[in-house]
Image (tube, rainbow, N blue to C red; front, side, top):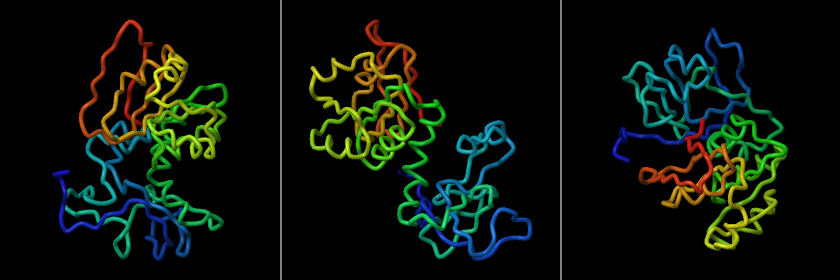
Length: 241
């Protein structure tokens, strides 16, 4: 991506056991299972940090790898390194009853889809669409269904229908089928777009109810191209919180 810092040790879905703790650590002890996601620090002083939105740190948060610590000199080396030292504020406790291989994806794909669904209080009575059934999309379907929403999978591949419904989706819409798309125009309260390949954001907007919300969490290879029209509902198209 043009901003690589070498030598680099990647990895930001980290689960392991605490080996040592500092004198001021209160939340962990040696032997505890712990997890670290994509951030290891932030300035903690700006408005966003104080509001609990460290990922939007106004002075620049510290990524788990390919980033700089808050001293702006030390390069962070991620989860594939032999060990990682992190402030307890950016470490999560993990139950010893959970299979660790299943916990790790929750630190990236999991929180990326959980966060916007929770932020907008998605739940029972809401009609939710998930675009794309990949690493992010399958998490989004499971979360939205678990929260009690009616979940529809929007996909370009008819082969994804069985998997989507096995994960909890109630409906499946093939986005290349105009008749199926027409059946859900102005239908959804919330669309979680997990697609990273170039696609039509305006199509998704036409499926939203007035004041509906479309959240895009897939990495965009190019800037969005949005075009409002009298036939489209009012919608907010926002990055994930």
